[in-house]
Amino acid sequence: MNIAELDSDALLAALRQVLAAKGIASEEEITERIAITDAASPAGGARMVAKAWMDEDYRELMLTDGARAAETLGIPMRGMPPLGVLENTTEVHHLVVCTLCSCYPRAVLGYPPFWFKSVSYRARAVRDPRGVLLEWGTDLPEQVTLRVVDSTADYRWMVLPMRPDGTEGWSEERLASIIREGDMIGVTVPQAG
Amino acid sequence: MIAPGTQVRVRDDWPETRGPCHIRTPHYVRGEIGTVLRHLGDYPNPEDLAFGRPAQRLPLYHVQFKRYGLWDGGRADDDILIEIFGPWLETSS
Image (cartoon, rainbow over all chains, first blue to last red; front, side, top):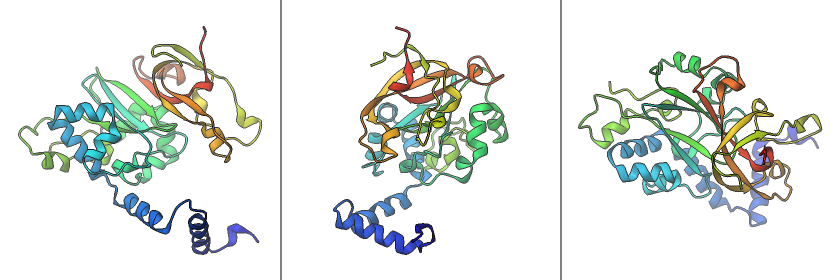
């Protein structure tokens, strides 16, 4: 029998049966986990960022314990890797990459975009990060240090971007609506317009 | 435990030349000098986990490297942060 030639649905069903029979994971637990994974999206991370812009205590929590900050907004973090939050300032800009595979803060951003998993992004984000940013239309001010964060092990990393000018007096919901996944990976920065 | 601010050298070791393995230390920092920023916690050794072997919990560190030391060109103040497990780090003391 060549396992590579077997029907994948039959293989998956057999694996689920074995997991349930051995008491490792029930059908219900697997279904729940798939639903949680499917429901995660950049909107979750955007809500965290918008709240951090409005609420200083929440910002502090997010920077010290990203997972707890996510949970307080109802984002499920049980069984997820620890979440580290990297704050962009007028002095330092963070860019997240996983050069070894495609580690991504799925709990708060959902499935990784295709470019994050591409060999090209993974190689160039460490070799020529300023060139990569320029191609995304992100031209950092001269005085800003660029800090690449290579996600190599147990942490997952998201960026807390700076609040853009022109958003004074906006509600948290309106702020959240302009924050894109790229802003929380560091390839782009939020735009008010 | 390695204290924050300690200068470390990543082991110049290439287990992939000796047989099947799973390594979370990128090739581009092997043998390079960096600075420990902080201890991120202790986690089971992925080099054993990947093969279903009993995995010892190891300290994981966030280590900072100057980017221009790793690649040609670049700005002097740009850097790269990488998570690296304790056994990969050598201290001079």
